[in-house]
Image (cartoon, rainbow, N blue to C red; front, side, top):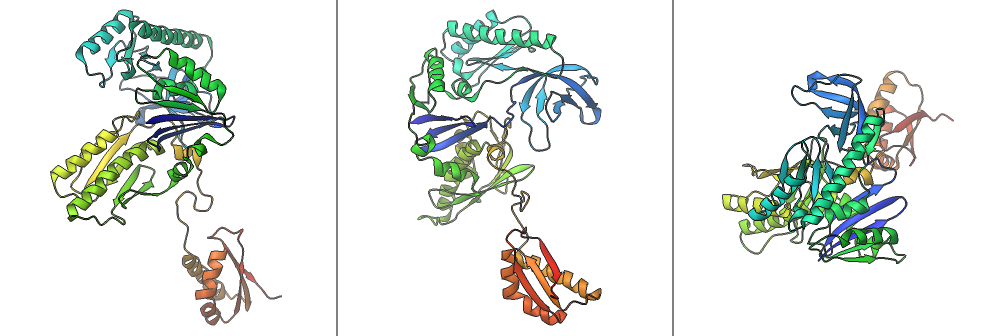
Length: 466
């Protein structure tokens, strides 16, 4: 049973894909966020950097967009170019753009600058591939190309032609506007999430769509009417209780930020994020198994492979992912885990690729990045640890205070009564472990003041001679 749940509110739109009561995908779009992926701009080249084969494009946003230049491609500063956003801006990095424009429809993707026809590998029937390719070839304008999507399989020629006409109409509007306006200008913005749900997420596997907004629900129903081979119930949810709370998904949503994820067998995953990659460590945890060691390891690794595939989609983790499975000692077992992982990732729209396993039982996965990662939308860096996930321990702060006091005394500090203003955690450690020793070393009286408003690593050393 696969259900799409959509919550539409003035401040944000949320979508979850639920398979057998488990959340497998979760998308959040907020009005305050700049989601630019697939949007087309007429941009102006600010500067060209031959050393990295790139140009920086002014598209009218706070950050310039980054354009990778093809070998031999020549661009000049001040030149106007049509570009499409491939990746949203992240942190200090501006959006990534391309000059290869693509306009996605329900069944086809228009490529106005590429005179080719490509077809989804998931359409395997030879006669169906020939039918689709021949029909699109007969109706595409010269010099333009199309990608035939998986959803086109079995679709009538009438509906394919309607998709072609809509896409060509959109391109005519973009092209005409591009000739008329000055750079930088927005020429085309990607559709809102409610419409993209139907275009990108609705498949034969979907049984029901539940939406808590009457207008959006009607819009989705209208779009579904013209779609073949689908039997989907569309339900308007009108209760006051939040729709995700109603279907008991809150705890699963809250767990998206957890570093540790428990498996049913008692093993667990640890997910750590770095600038260059995401690392997933598989651990045996509480699971001891009932058979031999190898059987125990395989059960944990099997469950881990399935959960890793789910977590990549759920957290929208992109880029390079390295998984450290528990050591397997036979090629047969290693190949089984790789097969499970590839099968579990087969329906992921971000096209993940699983590499072979190394001698150290490490598996590298690459997954396309497009929009901002879910963690970027939902969380900001901790103001205390600045995103590192760590702060200095109370003992480390205590050692630093003692080091500073030693310097002050060597410089001839005359005060015999000192006041230390520190964070409560540090105050507790000092009073239990260090104050008496410091008073003895420095021949002075030291009072400790606990101040919760201080950063845990901050402290003040004051004279207390009053």
